[in-house]
Image (cartoon, rainbow over all chains, first blue to last red; front, side, top):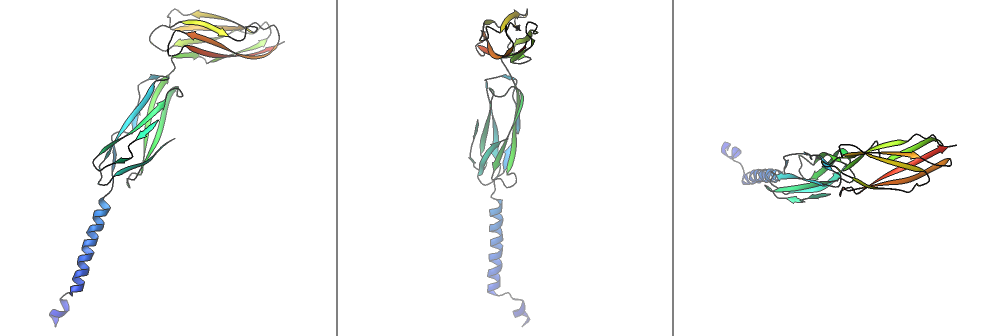
Length: 76
Length: 155
């Protein structure tokens, strides 16, 4: 009689397995994020003359596990 | 000018290229661009470009002269024309559209890097006028300099 009380039912075991699997799945999904890394955020040009072309490329590294999307670049 | 990679895969690298229009920027400048991403920890980041853009030839104190005073006693005005490159330059011609109002003199300074322009009023009548004086140079990057001349002559 006591044995029967503490023995979990098959249904309960199934629910526990689903809960554990579900939480792992959820955790995996939350880790799939992009992580933006920039070596520099400021660039200083040497002195130049009017009319010269001045441009600089900032290097970005995606250290995450999902695609990093650049949605927009705005100027102020 | 702005160019950028729209999607960077995990572990990959990308570029954001920013440019400066140096025909519009003179002197020291700082430009800011904000990058918006889907990184949940860093949705935006500010990028800065700094520098100094010099004119090929400077006009000091500026690109205009104002002649003001009583007719016949208007003080002459001067401006310096300074080459910012590392070699001497020449002003090859002076043209203006105020033959009834101004007389000019140009003095080359000994260094060969600068001139002084002096303009005086020769108006025979009182009144106001505006015109242009154009300096032609042998410098390929700046073959012409335009100076605006204003006159306010009283009787």
